[in-house]
Image: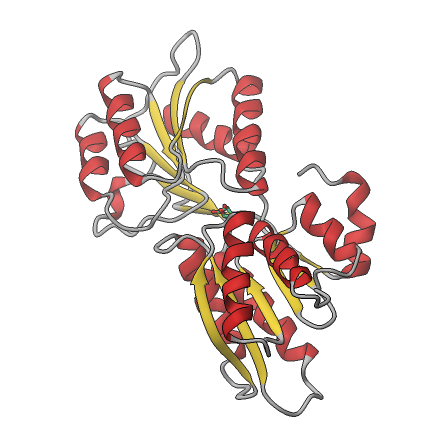
Length: 306
Ligand code: GYE
């Protein structure tokens, strides 16, 4: 396996490193920007990219990785749809002496030698920022605040960690209560459907914490459909800070948006270059991120890339 102190130096193939990349799917604006960033960065770095998009199914990703192994690519990278269930296929890559970089979402493996590094965001910190904003926003408010959570894909790292970070940030304020939580699949349609169901059962929801912008924008539609005003009657917090998310924030239909940066391509290609030439790399590379309120959204929107 490349990387680490005992890595055997590899030589870069003359006509470019062959990188097999298995992508989760095309569920969100974040994901589309992430795929584009990886494609552009590969072209710029002269990396020969074999990109497979898995339609949100783990078995498709496992099959793609097996295919990369049989084609003897130089290096594999992937964004795992869910955290668990990767040990076997990663062991196969290791046995074939093909290094693996995990991007975006973390894997839950018993053996951390199965991948060289993990490049991605700190999802727990993102969830915590959402919770901290809420604590601050309701600081002088007395009485219960009923929160509905539209979660990301069940079993995925961002869903697990955003939920955990959020819960941790609000735990000392007993007024802040998560009354329902359901998987919206990180899509607009999913967010709309889940929110419509929530509103039928709980017409008194005060706040929505959606695990991504697309789900939050779906919730906006569902809230409007019952004649309520998103951003006013029901506050909405989301994660990603895509252009559509920030636009809704600037218009006052979302209230707070945490950034999750999908433009990992250049950093990934740098790591690919280092691993394939036997250089030492850190085990974990975190992406820099911030959070936006309405004014901050207006300021960055003109130059927003995704
Ligand atoms: O927040 C969401 C996407 O894994 C960070 O996946 C990513 C998440 C992102 O579908 O929009």
